[in-house]
Amino acid sequence: MTAITKDNPRRLRNILLALAVTYMLTFLGGFLQDTTFNFVNYILFLLLIIGGIALIRKTINSETGGLTKGILLSTGISTALLFIFYLAYEFFRLNGSGNAADPIEGFLYLLTLLFWILVFSSLALVRRMRPH
Figure 1: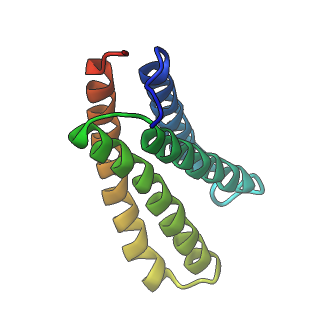
Figure 2: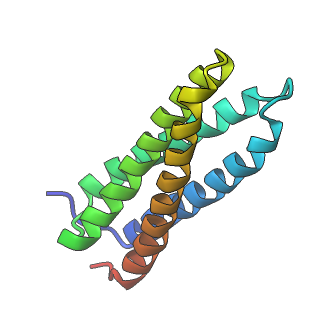
């Protein structure tokens, strides 16, 4: 079993804060959508899923409790869902299928709300963790 280190809650918190900042940047990158700088969105969403995978790996290797572990894993999974549905949205949008892209965009807003709820919940739970 992996022992929880003194900096484990700090690392989890730092990953969560990096995810929050990255997602804020993806929101701002949305203004670049119909420009030649749209590639920035792809880079930001790629960074978001990499951070989510890092959060999942760090959570699995930590000795966090049931609720905290579940919320942290859900936060990491939500980044993967955001990435997948963003790619689907872009695929349909760029192929001119607005009828398919519009509901996906609406679902992305719902996933965004879920992501932020999970990030704030995770930050609150990680703050309560005590290193051994």
